Length: 468
Image (cartoon, rainbow, N blue to C red):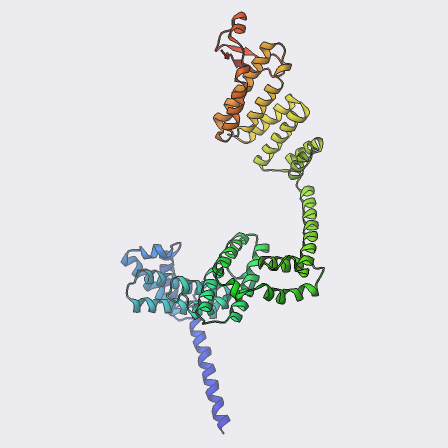
């Protein structure tokens, strides 16, 4: 009989729980007041859309009241809006956060904070996405809702990691680890709890550093923040032996697995394990061999697939003809003007200093300059061509006119590009004494400031200036 009496009570509790959930997740689609809910939604959304919490704080009193009243009506009639979007929950949190930040009464602030947390919970029940929302809820609890370094904040952020896994947002880990350290040092959680949560968090961070193309750098930054948060307790919480006990079995199970060796050795090295330890020596040796093989393989692929990169490496290796050929391939396949400009410049550099092909070099340097305005280096290089070939420009007078052509390029280079000013000034200073002598100009009936043409391959007209 007792069992029979108990069953209806259990059934009643179940029905009440389901009814409560259904009430939280009601939408306007089957509501008798659908139009009223939709109208209120449209009104408040038009006032809140695109606004930050700070914007809402600065809203006029009447506008804010209209926003709040219409949101409240829309939320009361249809918490889940149309059943496809969670805007009534997220907008409600934004509205109450603005109210909380302006409020001075502690009791009211707590009331608003509780409503914000409740709206997070309701959204999770109706729309899921618990990993993300627990993270945002815990973040707000720590920074804005007054929960700070509490166990409640810790449990919320920990749940975000458990539910979110590798998709856990990077913003979770700074407050989570700050709280962990505080709770551990105040003896509210144990070392074992810290290690359990840390392992999960560290795994997520490391995964995203390696695999998250969009936010990998953010996870890398937060990895450094986490290390700093644990700095004062790391030696107490973690030790080399702990990591060896945890990781070496994985290595022994997969002694030739590249990823396992890299991971295990990286962690143990970070923990300052003794480098002379036989297992560390074995790991390091394998790691270095494998790392070199991987890097060599990646380098080969990069050079095959990226002709401009390959050309630069060939140039460094002294393979100048091959480098020029690869630069030309890269120019044809690239649509990046800066990269193409650099390629033309590099070809011109080789042709100037290794080949002595000045006319072709000048043509390529000019192409580089045309593609990248305000870049002085091509003009420095043309000046070098003129100075380097000046002695082959005929008699002493024409050789010195070639120097004037070089000086003109150096001066122009620094006039358009301040980054090459020092380089240009050094050359100007070096070649100043190589300008024509006034007596030589007098004998040729040429005065300072007049124009003269350099007769060799340079073929440019220069303004005559004398060294004396």
